[in-house]
Amino acid sequence: MPNKCSVISVIYKELEWADTERCLEKLPKRYPIHFVDRRGVGSLAKALNSGFNAWANGAEYVWFVTNVLFSKQCLDKLVQQMEQTGYAAISPAFQSDHRFCRPIEGCIETREAPFLEFTAPIVRAEVFKQFPLDENMPYWGHDLDWGYRVRKAGHKLGVYYGEQLGHVYIRYASTQNNDRITARRYELRRKTNQMTRIALIAKYGAAWKRELMQKENEHGC
Image 1 (spheres, rainbow, N blue to C red):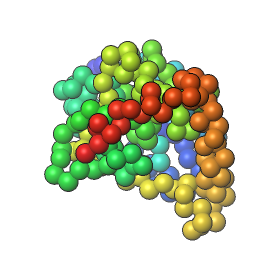
Image 2 (cartoon, rainbow, N blue to C red):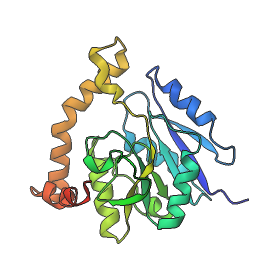
Image 3 (tube, one colour):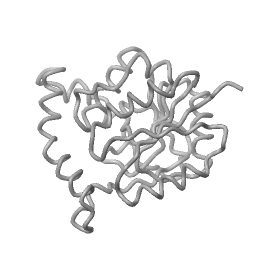
């Protein structure tokens, strides 16, 4: 039987990642699960690219999973949405910094999005093969960069509001616990905000925000 979707899950050092493991264990067995080691706070883009290159062969879709919680029917629903919409990638809704990613009360449909956070998107394998993540783009920069490149090629991205991820920004909780890897992740993210802006300027020019984020408000709900 052809492999409809492979799951590539990033290993996290935080204790909370055990909750993600328990969610993965409840997925239907027809979905093979592979783990990629980010080495604590290493490059997420590099980890996802390497996982895709190692394990995506033969899969129509790949579901990239980070430190999130989800229902046991989540992946079945995402696969169904990919087949119904023909989109290049779809993310479940979650409490994001970006308004269009957040759950909408009473909404269970997929709506088009300007870009996606690589929190737990399902991606069409043939598209990701053509458009891997830019490993020179730090942190949140790869969300904007990947979305822009994929949409420019004529593909569509979407948020599925019929499923919601449990995703509290664990890295922001460093003031509330003594976990060293959490504190290190928080500090690294803070320090690389400027690095991300510099990388986006180098690739897209000083008007990168207008170029890459101009559609965000149009997709807000």
